[in-house]
Image 1 (cartoon, helix red, strand yellow):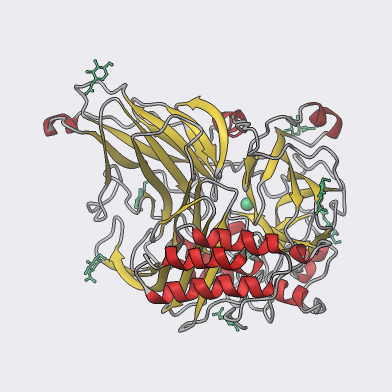
Image 2 (cartoon, protein in one colour; image 1 turned 30 degrees about the vertical axis):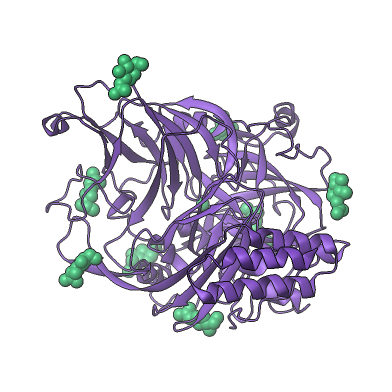
Amino acid sequence: MALTVSAQAVQQLNSMPSSWQILVFSLFCIATIVQSDTVEHTFNMCFFAIHPTFTSKFQVGTVSIPRICQPGNITVTAVNGRVPGPVIEAKEGDTVAIHVVNDSPYNVTIHWHGVFQRRTPWADGPSMVTQCPIRPGGRYTYRFAVAGQEGTLWWHAHASFMRATVHGALIIRPRQAYPFPAPDGERTVLLGEWWNADAVQLERQAFLAGTSIAPADAYTINGKPGNLYDCRITTNRGISRFEVRRNSTYLLRIINAALNTQFFFKVAGHTFTVVAADASYTTPYHTDVIVLAPGQTVDALMAAADASPAAGSYYMAISTYQSAIPLRPGSFNGNVTTVLVEYAGSTPSHHHHHQPPAMPEVTDTPAAHRFYTGMTALLRAGCRSAVPLAVDTRMFVTVGLGFSACAPAQTSCNRSAPVVAATMNNQSFTLPTAVSLLDARFRNAARGVYTADFPDRPPVAFDYANATGRELLGTALASTGRASTKVRAVKYNATVEVVLQNTALVGRESHPMHLHAFNFFVLAQGFGNYDAAAAEERFNLVNPQERNTVAVPTGGWAVIRFVADNPGMWFMHCHIDAHLSIGLAMAFDVEDGPTPDTVLPPPPRDLPKC
Ligand SMILES: *[C@@H]1O[C@H](CO)[C@@H](O)[C@H](O)[C@H]1NC(C)=O
Ligand SMILES: *[C@@H]1O[C@H](CO)[C@@H](O)[C@H](O)[C@H]1NC(C)=O
Ligand SMILES: *[C@@H]1O[C@H](CO)[C@@H](O)[C@H](O)[C@H]1NC(C)=O
Ligand SMILES: *[C@@H]1O[C@H](CO)[C@@H](O)[C@H](O)[C@H]1NC(C)=O
Ligand SMILES: *[C@@H]1O[C@H](CO)[C@@H](O)[C@H](O)[C@H]1NC(C)=O
Ligand SMILES: *[C@@H]1O[C@H](CO)[C@@H](O)[C@H](O)[C@H]1NC(C)=O
Ligand SMILES: *[C@@H]1O[C@H](CO)[C@@H](O)[C@H](O)[C@H]1NC(C)=O
Ligand SMILES: *[C@@H]1O[C@H](CO)[C@@H](O)[C@H](O)[C@H]1NC(C)=O
Ligand SMILES: [Cu+2]
């Protein structure tokens, strides 16, 4: 059976343009056959390969592009010369192969945000978690399947702050039909955060000084800030335009690729029906405002029907949601970023009459919470596993900011002042430097790389949502300034429940917690201190939303549950890069299962070495 399928695969691939692609995929398929232990497994892997397969070359390099609100160009790192980078368009079940060539002066890795990476743990991408970086001049081909998931995901650099400019959409269309009326058109709406500087250098300077990085110079939609910026000079990057036809429905694939910022999203004169979040279908959810934390995506239908013929065009807009309590004024850019949604056939003179939509206040936590808790999963027979009811591993994990001391490497740090560190259960995470977590696990050589003692509870119980001040701020951490590399080992197939509890020690703040390789069910969310008895009454065990990133409410908590059925080393971290870089992370070491199919596969031959 395997050989028949493989021959079909080659036949299909013959229609593809480049011969190296065919070679790669023939080899991939044959290698799979040779390595596999069961007929069924061989069939499955080759089955992916007979579908049209997406292959692309990502050349990571240096490009000159115009600044925003300032004259002249700036040099940044980008894929194939563009910000945002290329779109990966695949169908459910496809194999994706991305040949990354690093022509930049920096270490690079690419993460495929939200992709399950079943049996391909070496392709996940976070630097020093699943691989050593691709060094300047190096290359690596990421190969993975997008099976059992549909919707809008994205890809981004996962080494330092490089993802500010190294990111793009990853769209997985269904093989059959959408579970909602087919839209007349689709638009990708990629939200970004922009500095008129090299983000890698900004991060480096902030690290050396032990400070946070300056607020963004702009937020962008598909690379442009729009025309409402309060600039001394005209913005020289312009505004994106979406043409729509009256009485048509558009699927907006909205991605928050910003480094550090949550957004409110609106279109004047229009409302939305949300149909998916993080590439998981939702029951149709009607709203006039969409909220996205960094790392999250939302698919929403917008009917271009309620436009009054006189208007002609409307503003699409994003503004920031500032969850920090107390609010840190001056820590964000207050401009409204816009796109023009233009009706086909409307007369140009009408284009001057549009108004931006009324955006929520930057501190409108109730509006954010309404959106984040308003969605439920779409139940479809045969397509979705039910929420597992028996929990094998329970964890209660505080997430928040604390204080530390300058590390010796922070050479321009003020040593008589505390520096902000971020922690999970009072552990501030630091990446290994000599070997990746996954490689250390594969070689049974954890010693000196990581320890498997990430705690299941914080060391000290306190009034998490209210306690402020220095007494509780981790004196050990503060006196040594030492971070640790701790993972939590979980049995293969274990159902893991994690209560994520925000702390108030250095101000409350919503942290968008992202788990690699798994979607999790969000069972409940709330404010204040987690109260198990009261919360469990409210658990949605029927149709909770599935996500890969949950915005833990500011000063509150969220409960997530997932089945650890993919062996590997999977990062869980805050998707605010300013927090990730100061320690808001841990990793799950999902152990091998009982069958050859559920054992960590060996690394690909071209995996970069440290
Ligand atoms: C500035 O960037 C634009 C767009 O990338 C490019 O076309 C132009 O040549 C650049 N200008 C300079 C002076 O590098
Ligand atoms: C839009 O739909 C309305 C109501 O069905 C109809 O009267 C109108 O002619 C349609 N407009 C266009 C441009 O199709
Ligand atoms: C808008 O952006 C410009 C350019 O970065 C900045 O100078 C200005 O302060 C911003 N305005 C507000 C209200 O934040
Ligand atoms: C360093 O921190 C101390 C204590 O907060 C402060 O008094 C001092 O002004 C700071 N020095 C500099 C150069 O910022
Ligand atoms: C963090 O750990 C240190 C050292 O073990 C301890 O002194 C401190 O109280 C802990 N803080 C919290 C908030 O758990
Ligand atoms: C995984 O767990 C589920 C539910 O407990 C069980 O039905 C299934 O057989 C397990 N699979 C494996 C491979 O252990
Ligand atoms: C603690 O914080 C919660 C939520 O912020 C609030 O509802 C509660 O009143 C606070 N409790 C105390 C004792 O301050
Ligand atoms: C790049 O990666 C290599 C290998 O892990 C490492 O030794 C080196 O320090 C890294 N360089 C930078 C600038 O981070
Ligand atoms: Cu955070």
